[in-house]
Length: 346
Ligand SMILES: [Zn+2]
Image (cartoon, rainbow, N blue to C red; front, side):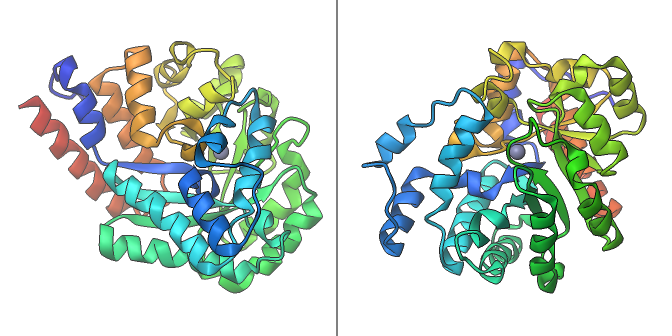
């Protein structure tokens, strides 16, 4: 669909204003240092940083693992249902400010159950925030339970069993944490079980890992979306497969920059993915750690790579297409998207 010409100087405002879905956000990665310190205080948890500033200064990562080490330390302050609610609510308010109208939120139960927090505490706190977001903010939000891939498949099965009493409070499962050395096929059986249960399936693949991991995520895990997937551009046959099957990629440019997947934002391959006809979307991944929420990702990436208003529309439309909402809701959001673009073109 061709959009009316929009002057370049209005592009930042358009990126902020356009309605969008966020499909790759780890709720534990939205925990800002201020909230970490507040929760540490009220829960009496010791953290190895003297101040908010010192913690923020530690956010200089060299790769995925150096980030994960700090991320798990930050998550250790989450103890009560209120903590999980407060964390999700803080994200959802920011999402509303960025004109996110739909959020599909990852959570890592194993990070919490391993510390003795009950599954019920985690899921109920997060789910209550999602419900309140619908009524108070007009933001539709659902949860996706992620298995930690550095742990075993057996532990993933145990986590699934623990979560099944709250099956109505999450819509799917994902796979995250340290990618290299933990290929998707390690979790083929637990994903097959989740598929039988009617859960949506997604997995991180091709962030730092090779295109081969994207192939096995598709063919062995049978995922509906690939999280990151940016390494796919190294494999022309895989690029054709992703385009033909309209497999969405949830791309996170600032995360890729902070974890040194691309040396500079100017080098990011988002344009290449769009040009190849892939259903790419823009997301924040772990916004508290990577220097920006979803609109920061849009603004900085468009500034660095010179993407156009037409591509902004494509990315926002892709985010609705790729979401796990009914077709009539996708249509409703697309109409809102077109209204905003018409306003800017007038
Ligand atoms: Zn991620």
